[in-house]
Image 1 (tube, rainbow, N blue to C red):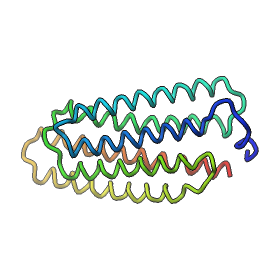
Image 2 (spheres, helix red, strand yellow):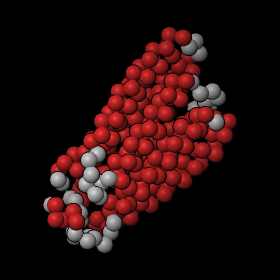
Image 3 (cartoon, one colour):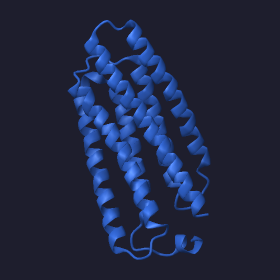
Image 4 (tube, rainbow, N blue to C red):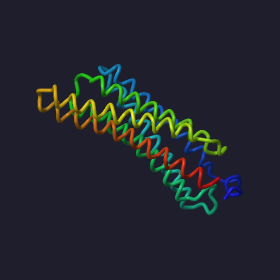
Amino acid sequence: MITRWFLPHSEPYFAHLAEMAKKVKHGGELFETMFGDFKNREKYSEKIKEIEVECDTIVDRIVDSLNSTYITPIDREDIHMLVTALDDVIDYINGLARKMEIYGVKKIRPEAEHLASLLSRCTGELAEAFSLLESKQEIGGHAKTIDRLEKEADNVYQDAVRHLFKKEKDPIEVVRWNTLFEALEDAVDRCKDLAGTLTSVVVKNK
């Protein structure tokens, strides 16, 4: 397995994964920035959609190559699992940006800003971890950071929902923000799941 990792391959899978992780990070950063400049949310939403489309192109290239390549640096199932999980994260971010428009959000709640910041930080840690994949460097520190951020997101989510049901009188606002808070927390969970998958792949191929 170690030898196969370093064999020459026609398709630079690790580079593609690292590139896609950078794009996911950019999407996370734009999403966080959108919350601080919400009057221009459509602009950020469109940019995030563009990134999601770019990521789909990378997914297609990797999957097509996996279907036609005999030798891969790691098990093809692992490559497919990683690229699919990355795609899930950017899909979640894109979906969240769209929900902000569809649900007619007019004002961002501070707990949502906090969750968006945690999500952005998670995508940054993922990008750093994926950049180390080809060289087989230690990524455990990034996974631990994401785990800590996810625990913080859980606490923020629980406090946000508790406050929402206790203080908000408008039932539409309750439904709207309960759904959005849950989606934000789910997106952070996806990042944690991906970090765990990536760690397992690295350990498996040591």
